[in-house]
Image 1: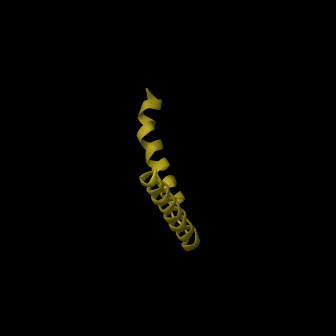
Image 2 (image 1 turned 135 degrees about the vertical axis):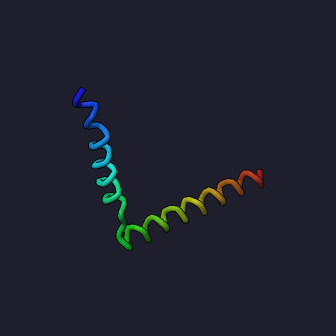
Image 3 (image 1 turned 45 degrees about the horizontal axis):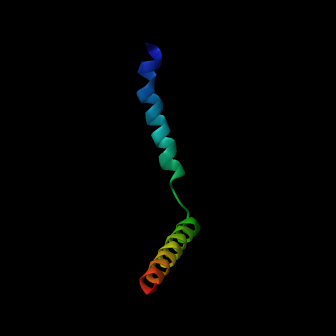
Length: 53
């Protein structure tokens, strides 16, 4: 039964580690924004091509 009692504690520590891992540097945030923007533009152009067919 003891392992079941430790699960919430383990999950709390895992959440703290996940929050620390999610902090992005300015360069990483900029790279992420450019990645999303590039994919968005690609999708818009791609779908616009379907309208022309």
